[in-house]
Image (tube, helix red, strand yellow):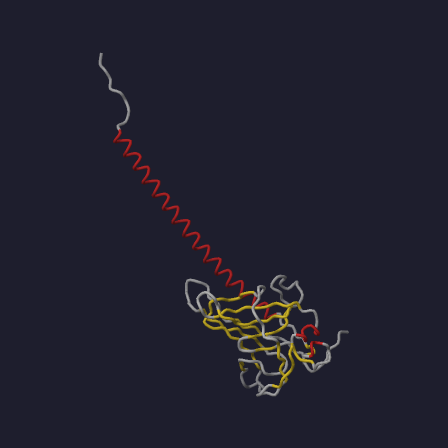
Length: 246
């Protein structure tokens, strides 16, 4: 009779198989890790772009919702002060009434908006923020007004409002900006001449357009950047005329 040898594998073959399996596992783990990292990085960039685009749409809708309000300016809003428009346009501050709300969009109550610029906290530069105050009527809006003072250049009565400050409810619209400034379109007295963008609104009534100019601190073509926002204003109301509902 012929004796057969015992079947099986040697220790060296087992070590080789375990080593190959370990290398395959490590390679698959690294590939999975790199895939998850790329997915997280792409998702974070998309979310950042969505936030930038969403904030720009919010600012545009708020400016488009400009509401013409005339209120007694000064004296605590008791109705005895001279009337003035609830609008103040400065290079770094814009106060107005809008029918667009951050929380309720076009369905909410009108809001007194205070756009202003403050220093940024992370990469330097500045940030654009806004305060929303529910508008309950002309008397309440007049209580925020300190009084009316004639402009040094035009002589028009310009309302003076309390300067806004950042609080816990202040909403950040744009961050890490090299600059952010407001511009106001003044119609030319002569139709043959072009309209003029002013750094401060020093005329009676409301401007014909609003613009917010922004530039990021670190421009990156791979990311969505804040852009200038320009909105026309279609208000033909004369602030010196009293309008009654009929």
